[in-house]
Picture 1 (tube, rainbow, N blue to C red):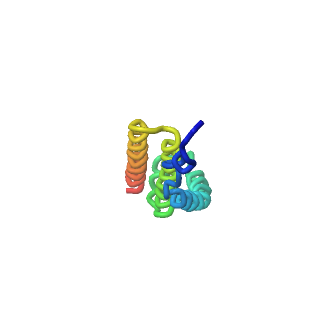
Picture 2: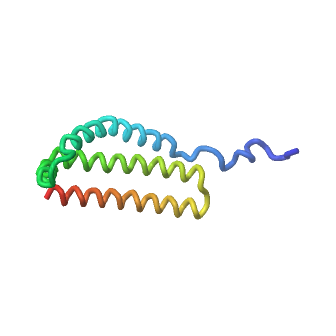
Picture 3: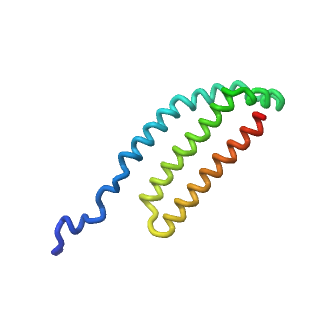
Amino acid sequence: MQYTTDRKRAQGLGSGRSGTHHHWHMMVSSAALIILVPLFVFTFGRILGSSHAEVMAYFARPFPAILSALTLIVVTLHCKAEIDEAIMDYVHGVKGKLLLVAVTAASYALIATGLFALVKLAL
């Protein structure tokens, strides 16, 4: 038999006040991906199998380079937000905080590396 009230049992389990922001962030990035991914696939597929010089010349043009950069950034940030949500739901304490820091660092390192590679291709 419990002598605590319903309010006392539920305290600390309520709204985190970030659900709406997360939902809209995911909706906007999903809508962007609906447009970016097919464009990227067709753009990248056009140059697939070409020689090194042709690839360098192709990515020196602004449209393929900008499209590749936008796709890289949006996909990485979308995946990072989903991984963060899974970590917050299932991993608690110091381990969860360390995983969040590691995922954030890995995400931004991936973005920086990808953008560096695109700049090297374009220039």
